[in-house]
Picture 1 (cartoon, rainbow, N blue to C red):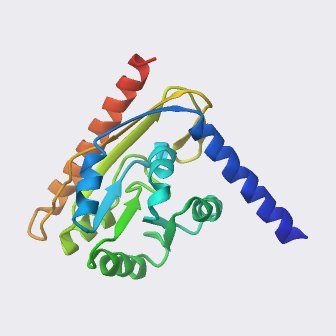
Picture 2 (cartoon, rainbow, N blue to C red):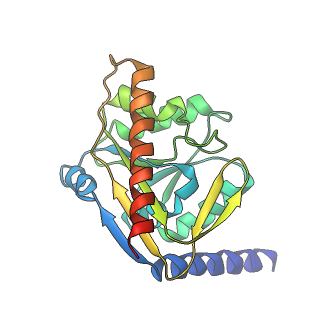
Length: 215
C-alpha cells in the first residue's frame, strides 16, 4: 500500500510539473548548437546553474540524455520524477563516490553519441561556483561543454543553499544555449573554470533581462 501511495504521489508531482511548464510561453534560442552536435553523433556536456535547472531540465528530458544526481533526499525525488520524464541518471557527487562517478562520466563521454547534463555548482553549492569535475571531464575527453541558462518571468523560490526556482503557470520562459566551449588537457585549469563561469553568468544575465522585457 505504501509503495502504491508513493508511486501515486510521484505520478501526481510529474503531472503537476508537466502542467506548470507546459502552460508557459517558451522562447528558446541557441538550440542549434545542441542539434549540430547531435547530428554529428558527438558526445558533449550541457551545463547550467542549479537555481533554474528545471527550465533546461524540462526542455531536454525527451531526448533521454544522461544527467548527474547526488544521493541527498531532494535528489532522490528528482531522480524518481526525472526517470518518468525520460532522463537516464548517473549517481554521485564530489563528497560521495566522487572518483568513481568521475570515471563513469569519462567512460560515457569517451564513446560517441552520449550527452551529459550537469549543474556545475550542484548538488550543495556554493551557488554559481563551478566544481572542478565538469571542466576536468571536458579536458580529459575532449568533448565540448554547451552552457545554458533559463529564466521564468514569474516563479516560486525555495531556498536552502541556493534559491531554487519553479515557474508559475502561464508565465514567460526564456531559455538560451551558448556556443560550445572546448577545453584541452593542456589548457590552464583555473582559466577554463573562469571561462565556464563567465559564460554561464553571461547567459543567465541575458535571459534574466530578456524575460523581464518581453511580456
